[in-house]
Length: 231
Image (cartoon, rainbow, N blue to C red; front, side, top):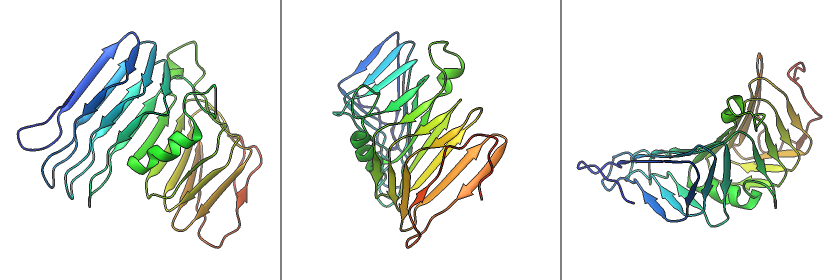
């Protein structure tokens, strides 16, 4: 499926269904310089599986578009390729929005290696907001497999409840945001930041911003809850 506007900007693609298995290709990219990528929305009532290619790239010096894949359950296969890049411009965002989400080498919803690769294609936000409306989920996000990237893109984890970081996260130049709106953030492994990388943590109603620069020691934090302050 390809969607383009007459002015060279990306078009819009909307997919709805009970269960969605996306194994083909959706392209809502811009074709002209300074134009923005389009919008792709893939939302299932039950399970969305992403195994194909989704692109909402911007034109030269333009802006990348917005991609949303959502469902009560959301799985991303190793074969998936998602991009919101814009050459010489600003990348867009891929939103992954299930009830719960697990990053794991096996038995989870995406592997750490796949997520690491996808971060070369734009900013990624994983939000467990479906966990606030689906009784089969709690709104938790688990990092059980190492994730690393060297692009300038951001990985944002927005949990309706808890975030558990049980495997290492390594970033160089990008940004990691961990937001737990009503639960706890437990950092049980190493978060390593080099170059211009930055880490921000938010626990409602407590907020902390933590930035580590090159030459700083690797950080390891004990389990944190929304009643714990950072220093």
